[in-house]
Length: 180
Image (tube, rainbow, N blue to C red):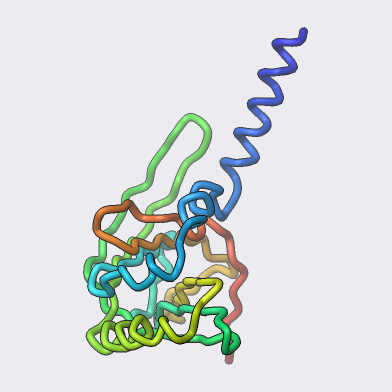
């Protein structure tokens, strides 16, 4: 009886952690990210991947990487333009527990202007003394592709070539509305 209860609890914990949109592994990976790690980044190596269930598409020209810093001078916000590196159509996948519809994956990198701006922020970091870093990806969608009122997306971020992509958002369902 006790082992059955243990396995039921283990199964429940696995299911709950598997359903989370922001994985604990990402938080664990970034726990030691500090000023030195930020200054060591090579902006030309920074990548993001956005996966959207078909037929929704990303408007690349309106998609940005954002950085928010908490410093001794207060909060500072930066936005960097992105360029398309690769676009891949991913086929539908079937597993025992679920199915994943066909989706499109966009790999994006900092645009040349974004690289220059990121370098400038890195140079000013010494005087700003940041205490917190927050990266986000602001993805705009092409309006003609918004057939449904819900969009399922995944956003990944890669800060260095030596490390794998970190999952920022994993298969989150987002309500969207079209403006007239």
